[in-house]
Image (cartoon, rainbow, N blue to C red; front, top):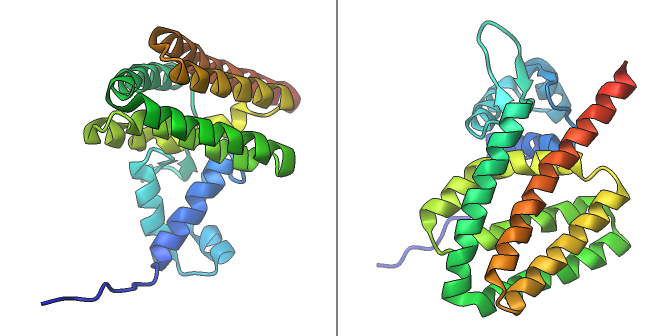
Length: 225
């Protein structure tokens, strides 16, 4: 017996979740801001029920903090969490890269080189927003090269927070150009089979993301005083 696949339309909860998730990552919603179900339902043109369900999904990703005694709010990264994410990324991405080099270095280079080419094109034609998405794809490709479902799932658990951090960190042209240069060098190390150089640069690259976020945060605090 054969069954035809069903073309199920996306639910309101899924659409609300995707829109709110994207807004947090791309900076349309500010870190630490309070969220009102009523206000969000009005802005999205839907009832509060799918909004509430979408917020629960965002809570599971760590993007939203729901406190029954207080207001629901978007997460905010403190120094401790920045360091924890940095350490987690370094451990996971470097471990994945070592496996990827061994299993299919040629395939990994092909993916990374293609992404870097698209990065350059997007910066010339469209700017930072599409570049950031490609930045995420670049690091996802490193983790995926391990072929380890558990590593991929673990990285996916924090990928949205990394995206939100990346948006704030890449706040100037100088930071973005430095990021592009780093990604190109990483791809080159894969091409030349320079594993240790790749791992060393990747570790520093991840460190720089946290430092750039700290600079952005400090600048925001200065302007608010």
